[in-house]
Image (cartoon, rainbow, N blue to C red; front, side, top):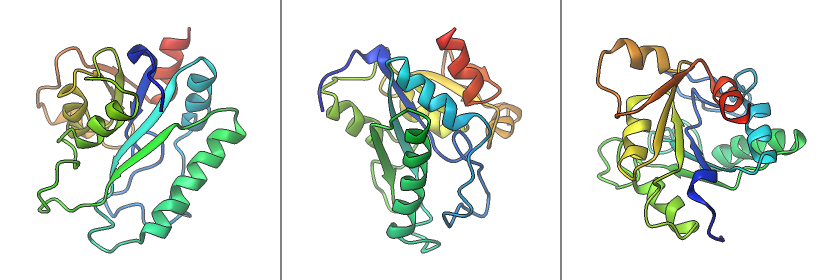
Length: 185
């Protein structure tokens, strides 16, 4: 992929930011339900010149809750919905590992973020923005100098009420639509 200005790159978590999350895991295409306004927010950001990538932990693969084909179908549903609204998702990175697999891609580790940086020939992600609903989403992005945004959807409220320190400068929004509106207006 070509180099882009870092300030035009937005990296989104998936479950709890774009689609409804579940403590029981999102295991099928039917269970993959967009959060109201999230699809349109992604499309609007793309139409405004932003490059949208996704970095998502998917340990349900390692736990055998769903197959790679099912995950691909969920992501095809996501892409199709965004495209039908005039937008585009440039890259979807996922960690298929479980918590004990000692990989470097499972958030809060920054492996998926490094992959995205490499795709766009960026040394780090200074100037880029990452949007998540959990501390680990934000920690992964902040390790490569992303601006961090927490949304209250998904596990966002739980993250806020846990009282743990968020990365310095984290801004909180009600949802992805509110975040998109803040940078588009």
